[in-house]
Image (tube, rainbow, N blue to C red):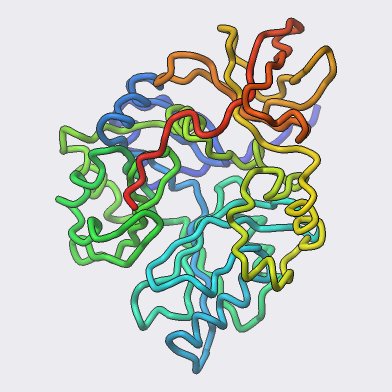
Length: 384
């Protein structure tokens, strides 16, 4: 019998450190990644109260730059922005130096191919370059899309061989400030190039937990040293992907492949705020006709929060019913350590997306009580 060849998992520059710290490792997005260290519940609550250090090196950091361009300054930024705006509905051209923006890649029907963060560098000599971080599971598809869609005068530099770390929590700024001077000058959704022990690092004040925090892109050769310095601080502990998922669910943040996919538009996903007025007026992004119509008339489906009033958690794929009629599906669900009860997100028909609507969640064939609610479940703690 012919055997199926198993593709070897990649490891991040912090893999040896994870093993040393006793991490439980699992396959995720083609990598061997830590899902937990001390336990998901403990790591989740530690991040909400202090600072959790996450290895997110499976993600897709990259740079898009004008190749061999005579342009500089604002003209260079406008030129590179015009390229990425072929694929996203957000205004990248209006970013100020050092500003970052969440956006989505769209297909021709307005469906979401991925969500990503785009940052305009702060430095004058880097105008004409954009720093992007795309999802790990989609990075190769995204990079292929860039290469076949954008001008041949745009170069793509993939830097997923570096380490990308996220330090998240109310003590993150204090802990990182002692290691990386200059990070404290950043507000939420700002980033800039900094230096650590003679090495260039990219620091952004953002994250995926609802807490204040940072993502730092570090050269592989100094990644372990950088992480060890942070972990020497009593306010910082290593945290795995398990708590990262429960933290983002409490914060009402989407996971690509579950809450977002090529069938969903930004309007359905409750992400219409990523489309600035100038782009709505220009109507020059993929799927603009469908998306603009949904902005006026409303989408057929809408992403909502769900309070699970029964003890049984409603996981991805759970059917949502009202009066025995199917009205939608859960896309993310689990237990909230902060609220000490199950929570979920999903899509329902728009006419039923009213907070307070009582619903049934069909868990293992049995209806369990739930209620439509607003997002997020836990209020964000961003530094603005």
